Image 1 (tube, rainbow, N blue to C red):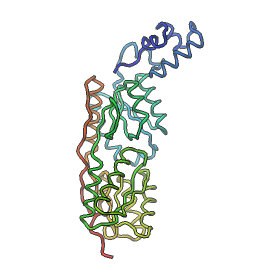
Image 2: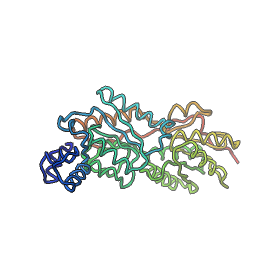
Image 3: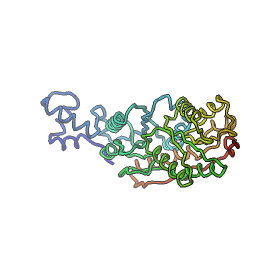
Image 4: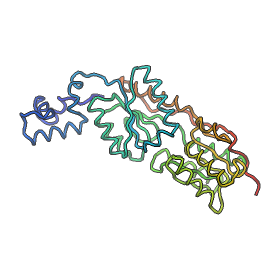
Length: 339
């Protein structure tokens, strides 16, 4: 996992190392055309002229990166990310590594951040979240040979290590539990529809409901925020045949759904049962406390950090499946009230 050097750029450009140094540092000695070609090659290889000294010394950044293509406001209310980051920090701190975090608007911006971080020697590796189908980040990270751990999957990520849990198995457990309570009209408020784990959950939800004869099962997409989760809940509850149970793709939307149900005069769990995914302190603080799909997110993050540090150390690191989220029943689920 060798970082690009001035020698690598010189070889690719067919010029001397001195010419590369002149071009990247804006000094005379090369033509404009040669300078532009060298700068373009350096950028493609993820090399920054501002990091030449560190490049020559081979120094480690003692930092890893996390770039999130999510609205920044979500991070302040999303317990899942906070739990994940706490797990990162537990392992990174023990090795005197720092965590560099940046929020971006698009996947293209995210790849540019990777190029800059790697070229400027700001990080030694990165965590990748929110995997998408045909994810453009994967080939860029492989081209840069930047050590990375993808959190989520399984999917085709080439040489990049993946850490994931069985979302399909967890959703099946939740649906079967609700059906055992007597529910026949079950709905789901999903997360961002372009994310691979959302698609996996949607497909699993549809398939398990069909296999159990629950033909009225429906998924409504949302964006993990309380505002959109509440709106999605309201649309489901004013439908002609409203669901008697709703599964939410995160705890924030589930809490918002509980509030909407109570605002509409519905009893939880008498008129509506609610299941949240993932579990968090929020689920226990509301009334009634929310039944949830639970897993140790901090341990998940710590495991990802150990894998990334091993990859940075040059070890071969394979894909790993974590334990499946398990159902924790609480006061928000019960048999549906008789009509």
